Length: 181
Image (tube, rainbow, N blue to C red; front, top):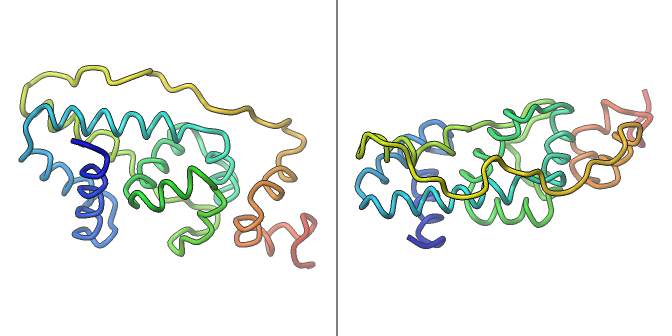
């Protein structure tokens, strides 16, 4: 399995699910059950590399701009959902997290979630072999990047993610450069 086939499987499941993340994960599992075991393992390896790549301060800051707070578990779920959106959306968000402002399904103080995305291959592997998947990389993830000082939190979010800030904070944070009360 290569990345182009991986992303084709993601897109096929997303389209068939109508964008419903949990259903998409289930449809991916159905696809994986029809593959040879080595391809299930390779699917997981690709997922693992995406998980590592997306565990970065820049993307986490964008999610904070949307939801104002997000735990490590919540960030994992958001990144699973992001992979489920397909290659173009995922790669745009990794290259420029402010591009998330283009996604109409994002809502203020909420973020989409699909941590099940990370487990589709491991669950299928366990069904097929009664055993766990071999390790795929460098677990646990190491966060890429450095956080800014806490006292600069809102200013950094506003500066780093201007489109997300304008979309989600213009009315809720008037002192941060948005509309006045």
